[in-house]
Amino acid sequence: MMATEDNLTRQVEEIEALAAIYGDEWCVVDEVSRIFCIAITEGSEKNTRKVCLQVMLPAEYPSSECPIYQINAPWLREKERMEFSERLLQVCQENTGECMVHLLIESIRESLIMTENVDSHIDLLPDQLTVITQNLPDTQIQEDFETPEIHHGDAFTERRSTFQAHFAHVYTPSQVKKVIKKLYENRKIANASHNIVAYRIFCEDRGTFIQDCDDDGETAAGGRVLHLLQILDLKNVLMVVSRWYGGILLGPDRFKHINNSARNLIQQLGLINSKVYINWSVSDLSVVITCTLTCILVSGNSKVNSRIKARQFYKPLLL
Image (cartoon, rainbow, N blue to C red; front, side, top):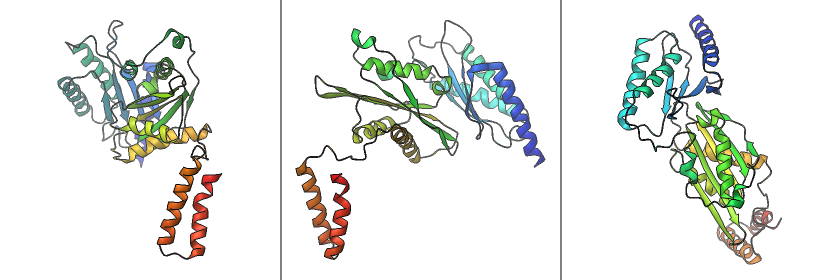
């Protein structure tokens, strides 16, 4: 018990020191779970290479355990990533029992300075948004639009991974770019492990949609969010779901949490139409009701139960 209290005291003191040293660069992802992140650069104004370090402080740190950490840098080659990992492991091994987050940060900074032959054209956070929007058409009229209002959902944590949704109404591809750029001005969002993007813009003149999505490293997540927007029949919307990975693999549950984050925010904004079938034609409804009645009657239930079940099914369709 004494050791745990001592660890907590030392953690609090270390966090206060890190916040003082790094200022706004030091971000709190989840204070309860002790998850933090920072974007590290080599300090040169000419070079914008970044490595995002996310750390979680376990209860036994620093007395007997090291911080749980993850580095994110899309530009890192496999060889360079291994070198970074080896240096961080060495820091942990040499400083067991001591507060070492500051040493981890500065080790990454030294590795950045030592890294050679990095291609000058590689996109980095927050410029990775160009990957999402590089093929979108722009017009002079679209550039005149102001950045739309951005709505942020409540963040929640599941097994040390934190999820938060962000939503905006967009009417042009240019606005998609502006919203994403605005989001990345927030250091906490920019340092997220993944920022999953999906948008749908309805072109009135063509009667078609401009829509796309981006996984940002969370395979298939963007397509699932886009599918959610489609089945809810939402138009002129942009959804971004941020995930800060906490070191525990969630498996398929991560997709559930990503979609739930998006859906909950949409619901909070009052954009989910309870009359989801309002656009169905009478013929569509009659086919569904007929098929349902047939299935219920064939199942062998009584006529009374059949009428009740049928009424329960088609009543919401006709609201």
